[in-house]
Every structure is written in C-alpha cells, then in structure tokens.
Image 1 (cartoon, rainbow, N blue to C red):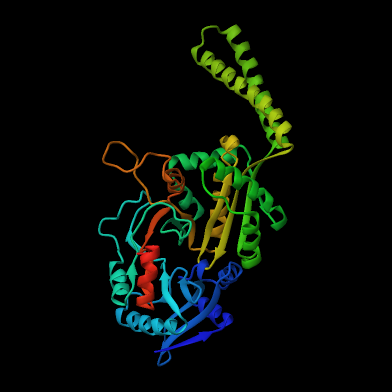
Image 2 (cartoon, one colour):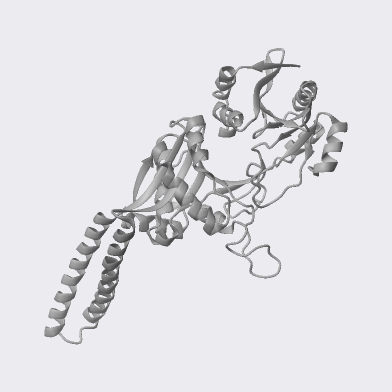
Length: 427
C-alpha cells in the first residue's frame, strides 16, 4: 500500500465527495491547527488505484526531538473493513515512525451504541463494537471511556436533530411541551434575531464571559471568535443575537393594557346592571389580575430602558456551517432577562434556517454524558450538576444523544512510547 502526500486543494476536493466529513476534518480547521502551532500534512493511502484512507495529520513536538500526531475525528476510511484498516494502519505506522512520531491519536466520530434523546441505549439498536475490535486488531489502544467534559479532547457525547425529510412543523411538534411553550413565549414577546459581523463579536465575548462566570466554565477569548471567522470565513460561521426592542415591547404592553382596561370598564358596567353574575365576576377578577401584571411590566420597561437603552440583549450563539450539518459551537445568555426566552428564539430560528438551506443535521454539540436525575441512591447525579442542565435543554428540542467510540492511541515507537506513558500516564 502506498501513502502519498496530497496538497490542501486535493484534500478539500476529496472531502467534497464524502458525506460524513465534519468541520474538524476540513481545510478550514487545518488553518486553525497551524495558527495554534501544529504542523499539518494531508495524506492518502491507496492500493491499485483504490483509496483506502484519507486524512489530515497534525503534528506537535514531543520531548524536543520527537513528535505527537493527531487526526481530528479520525480517518476518512471504512472502519468496518478489518483487512483494509489493518493494512492501512500498518503502512501509516511505518510512515509516521520515519517522521519520528512516538504515537498517533484519533477520536472517530462514530457512535458506540444507539441512544435515544434521554441517553438510554435503544433496545435492539445499532452498535459499532466491531469498529472498536477492528481498531484494536490494527494495533490501537483504546483510552478509558469517560463521562463529563474534557477541554483537552473533542466531545465524546453530543446530541443532534435529524432534519432529513422533515418539515419545520414536524420538527417543532417533536419538541417537548416545555420547549414549544418557551419558543412561543419568545414569539409572544416579539424577540428579534440579528446576525452579527466580526466587528460586533465583542457582544458575544461579553455575554460568554458572564455566562462562564455564572456556570463556572472557562470562556473562549474574543480572539478565538475572530479567528474562527478568519479560518472558516463568513460562509461557514454565523453568530446570532436575540434581543428585545423595548419601544416595540412597550407599545405592545400598553396596547394590551388599554384593551384590558376597556374590558374591565365594560364588565363593571354590566355588573352594575346585572349584579351577581358569576361568569362576569370571574372575568373581572381575571382582567384585574392581568392589568396589575401589565402595570408591573410597564414599570419594568422603564427600568430596562435605564439599564440597556433601546435594546435588551438576550442571548448570543455562534454556529459552524459545514458539510451536512450546522453545529452549535458557542452559546451565552442574559440570565437576568431569561423570562424572554432568548436562547429558544435563536435555536428555533437557526433550525428553520438549517431546514431551508438543506442541512441534514442540527448538531447541538457537546453534552456531559450524564443523563440520570437523582431520585434515590442508585442513580448518578442531581439536576444541575455535571452538565445535566445543558443536556436537558438540548433534549427539549428532541436532540438525540450520540456517544462516540472514544480516543485511540497507536504507538509508533513502542519503546519511547512506554517511557513517555510511564511519565504521563496516557493509557
């Protein structure tokens, strides 16, 4: 088997023929690798004109004289064909050994087992244990399967909506009742969506920092957001802001106030002539309670104007659009104004856009892999801990859980790897 280097254009053209390619395997991600200090190379393995595998190899220095190699989201190859995978791995190992690579790491985006939206394993569903066995037969070592978040690794648990062959109404009706209600609440408040440009990314940065402080995670930097646009281009990155137009909102509330006030006056006039009418008395009580809530909202609007001016930023999300999916990469929200349901407005807008533009999947990206609510001593976690809230939010959109097969190590220089592993405890 021959392993040949190919240029970035040849690699990109090949990716265009592969339905399963993801953004981490793209030529745009290669630019990110290089910016972050990696050396990138593209290879293709073939025998008798048959392509066995294609991939992007990313290298980092290791112990000064050696290298570590990483293939983001794995090779573009048939993992089900054991013989081809073994032959390719053997050739790749020799290729990397000559480049002084101590070990290779891959993390294929391949489901381990089929799970439903609640994270439960589907009875009689598909699995890919054979892929794991094939990788081990090829010489790979599987790292321990873990739950939770690891910022040094790609997400092992994700969730996504399968949009194929479905209308917007069908997708919406599959949401949980709470998610449908929250989406309609945002619509009731006339929450608007605006696309941000690169010069406006400080809005995302500010909201992300506030969200990270509240939820205790490490926020990305403003430079990180700007570089995504630089690497991927505006055709593949989209940042949306949901916001409340306070003048419009005030007009809406005042109109409701006047309508309710008129209804109260009519009901009172009726009751003066027809005292004791239970239906009208109940209506009057309901209208008066609602009028009181509207008065509070009008007062709150002035407070909002004093704080924000004409617009209240509610949520801000960054998406990657690549291949067959839209990926929700970064999300932040204004917690104090959560009653307006800004995040729901953004996701419903983007889901409809994904359907309109012909994407197959709406990828909510990372979740922790913890799915249980603590009801007794037998289950794992309590709601709100270990990322349960994030999972539950995404589950509301009927996003199906994907548990990937994990990370695999291929020692290319076994003796050096053994020494390094004893120091770093990789596996």
